[in-house]
Image (tube, rainbow, N blue to C red):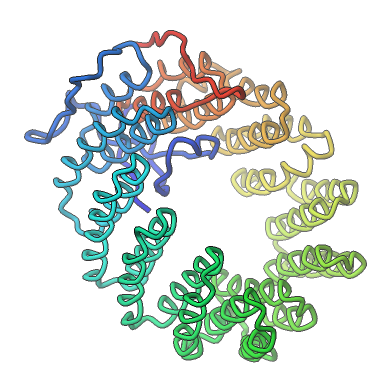
Length: 520
């Protein structure tokens, strides 16, 4: 939840908000925002990191600490020091991680925005639990809960409650009192959708822990809220979630009852226009009903979606559910219906996107040839479009299909035809990740090297784009290549993140990088 603030720094052209994550998720493409951090150091009076006890000045994480201490924006400093603490945890260097956490406690005291401070406390609590400081972690969680209870935005409050509950379940029984206290606060939220969602999600967590009795209590508490939500599609979504919880514990009668109630909210509903987000809620209800083997009912629900391209996506999801149930003929029927729906939109970008969904649907059931044919059709639709961002978004969705067909080089070639660097990098780094996920290391490197072919263009790119490519080299454990890119980055915020990522990266054999760190 906690995100670094984006502001101009170095050559960065801007920023994109992204959720907090720890360094062991480095494979994710993240075009991070850059802090205003080219000043000599943090703001006046803010605590500096105490390097006492950190004697290895040549270690990559020492470089990360040095750069992090120069980040001016307090939120971004906390973000990057948290990543460094996570890196030390990955390396099982607990005393160093604890020292960084002590500094983070000092920094967090300087955050005045209460909602932001609450998010930071939750993230720090998770790190504290990982260094086995359960008491400090529980204090941080409870403090975050105190702040959350005062937040006026009930949707944001509910999201923070969910995050607190998630961390508490990761800890186990020691944190269950925090869960109980959070649920007491959830029960007084006026926003019925938020209340029902948090209760059913927490019921699922209890069920997965084998604590069905506790889960059942929460399901019963969720039902009145779910049935009273004003929006028919969100009411249906809440009721179908309740049905899934009953099905999970083997209560077929109650599952059927609430699945029927969910469907009744939508079957026969005529809506001429609906925002895409709301339409996708209806699609989700159809998917949940299909998960309960209510295929005919699910198809009737999907028919209530006004947008043809979203109906197409929903039909692909139904087809995948049919295939999982063993009914492949019905899966093919759903994919065929999806193609018909796709053609109705009249918008080439939406049609291509729908065929990308169909292609991935065929791939998911092992029909690689049909997947490839539909992917080719999606590409042909995009050929005449000048909007490179729309083209790249479809190409990204087609990557698994082409790589599975051994035709990834076709997308690499098409990516090189894109004039804009951002969409080109988006496609090529997605190819890198897909190759890597299949263990095709040599192929995984090639798109990254291709990005850097035009040295002048790449050197003039925003630092956030350069950093995104650097992350992919780190994920492949091509550390020397990553270090070459650090030289191109002036922002202490991104340099610190780069060093932290290198410090936590591991080879396939579990070894960490131990080579020299030679950068300006």
